Image (cartoon, rainbow, N blue to C red; front, side):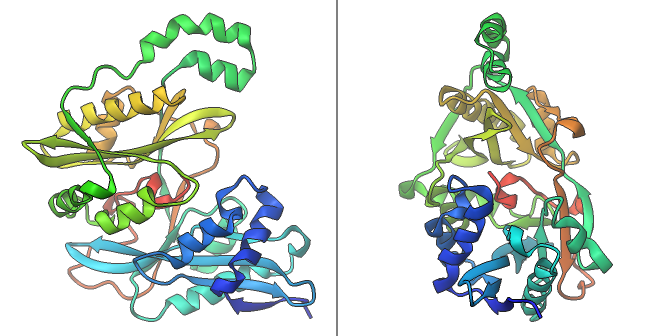
Amino acid sequence: MPDWVVEDLTRERVPAAAEMYCSHYGPEDDIADPEYLDYEYYQNPAGPTLGELAWNAAKQEAAGGYALVTVNFRVGGKDDVGFHGPNSMTRADYRKQGVYASVLHRAVERGEDGKHCLIYGMPNQNSYPQQTKNGLFKDLGAIPLYLRPLRPSGMVREYLHSGFLSTLARPFDGLFKPGEATGQFVKLTDENLELADKFWAAVKDKYPVMVVRDSVRTAYRFLHIPRRKYECWYALEKGEPVAMAIGRNMEVAGIQCAMIGDFLYLDGHEAQARALLRKVMAVLQEQGGDMAGCLMLPNTGESKVLRRAGFFRCPKFMEPQPFRLCVRRLREQAPDEPDLMELRNWFFTMGDYDVV
C-alpha cells in the first residue's frame, strides 16, 4: 500500500503544496510561494479551484498535486466556463508510484459536473504522457513561439557570459530598436479599468474560442497578481480602445526576455496594434529586456503583425519546452458550437498559459 492518499486540496493545505513545489523548483519560483498559490487558487473571481493532493499523513507532506483553475470562456458567441490546469507535480521521493495519474484522474472526475465545457493545459514533457494516455486529453497541436532581438549585446553577455563579445555586438543594438511608436497609448490601472471592458466588448467574438479578457479577468491575471509586474497597455482611436498588449521581463535560458503575455487588436486597426507593440517592446527594453517573445497561432491576424514588427518563428530546437495545447472536452458539443478540439478555432497567448 502506498504511504499517501489522494485528498481534495483545501486552502489550509496551500502552504504544503507550495513547499512541495519549492522542493523541486526552489524558493524563487512563483508557485513555491504560498501567497502566490493562494491568490491563484482561492482569490480567482471566475470561481473555485478544484485541486488534489497526494498526502502523506505520517510525514505531513504533499507527495504530488494537480489543480484545475476556473476560467471564463467565450465560445461561439456565448459565455461559458472551463478549467485551466497550470500546476502539477510529483515529489521526487514518490515518483513511479502512480501519484500523478491518481491526482490527475481525480481532478478530471470532479470537473465533469456538467457545468464546465473543457479543461486545457500545456503539460511539460513529464506530465504529457499521462495527460494524453488513453485519450484523456487530446493534443490539439503546438503553438509557435515568436522571437525578436531587442539588444544583441545583452543577449551575448547573458547567454555567453562574455563582456568582450558583448562589446563587439553593441554596434548592432541600434538595428533592433523597436522603432518610434506614434499614436495614443494608455497604461491600464485600477483607475481606468473600464478600458478593458470596452475593448473586450468590441473584440470578444473575433475568434471562436477565447478566454475572457474583461476588466475582472485582466485585473486578477495581470494587475493584482503577487510577485509579478506587468506592463498593460491599450491603443486608442478616437478615445476608444482598439488594441491591447501586455508584457513583462523575465529570465529565460539566462536571457532577460520581454515576454508579450497578451496581444490582441480589433479588426481594421492593424496599424495601431503594430504601434502599440513597438511601444510595449520599448518600455520592456528600457527595463532591461534583451529579447522579445510571444506565443501566437500562425493563422491569426496578430501573428502577421508580430512578423511585420520583426518577430520570427523560433526553431523547435531553441524552444525552452514544447508548447502543445492539450484539451479535454467535458460535455457534448452543441450543434451550433465551434469545435473546441480544433486548434484553428482558438485564440491563445502566454497569458492564457500562465507561465509569463
